[in-house]
Amino acid sequence: MKRTTILILAVLVFAVVLAGCSTTPDSVHEVVGVVTGVTGNLTDIESFVVLDSEGNSHLFEPADGMTVNGAPPSHLRDHLVSGETVRVFFHEGSSGTRIADDVMDA
Image 1 (cartoon, rainbow, N blue to C red):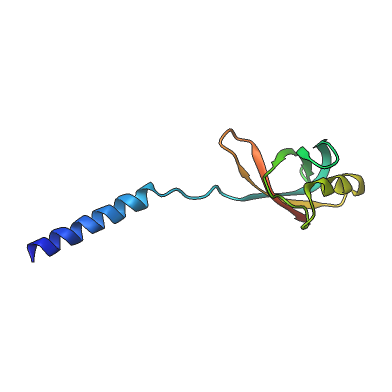
Image 2: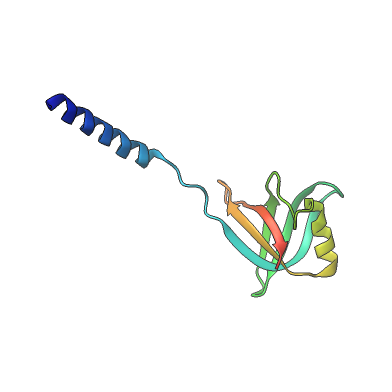
């Protein structure tokens, strides 16, 4: 019986330690506004800027695989021209850079 109790305690301690070591994913944030700038060439976007309703500019770098309403990131240029409002879902990188995960019509 004593061995079973020790084994159970060891498993519980291991589970608590393992839970304490797990990392949580970066929090996802969102910004709604109009695209006011796009940097990069016709096919590859390096960064873009969104102006929110309070007048704050937000600089984003696209994440690998980011889409704009399912289209490639270069579609941001269409939003730059049209002024159509977008919703950007992003997380903050380790250096504080805002990494855009997805962009949709707002």
